[in-house]
Image 1 (cartoon, helix red, strand yellow):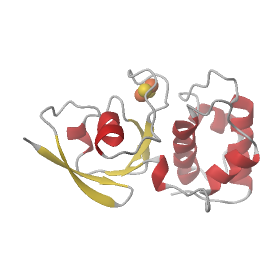
Image 2 (spheres, protein in one colour):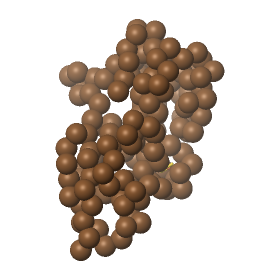
Image 3 (cartoon, helix red, strand yellow):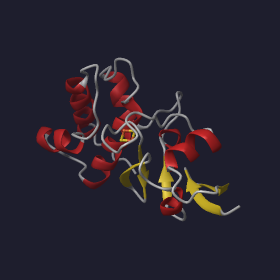
Image 4 (cartoon, helix red, strand yellow):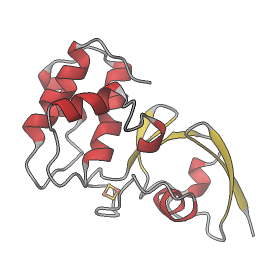
Length: 158
Ligand code: FES
């Protein structure tokens, strides 16, 4: 069976798959047990499956395992911990920027990517960067405040 070398949250994995088109999302969740990344639409439209690939956002539901091989992938598990949350996670907690929380991990990953490239975004830039992360609960305003808080506190993400 073909295998693919993945670098996820700084660790190296060799993942077996018969299908080079297998979505990275399925590999992360089902083979690596990284269930923070969520399946929403499965079509690249909702953002709940967002991860970072070489520092840029990627929709893991439409990224194949073959395309992910050799790239540096970061999932929500690679950011902080409950005891020591990443600055963006801390800002989301401080602003209570979630309701059901299903979309939150993907949204946090998009915010991390934004702040890495634009450490002091204005509200319009935040809104634009998170435009592809849909929240059915309607927590968008709190999300915007959380990202602004993270930026304001001068916390850069990687
Ligand atoms: Fe990937 Fe919706 S599950 S964008």
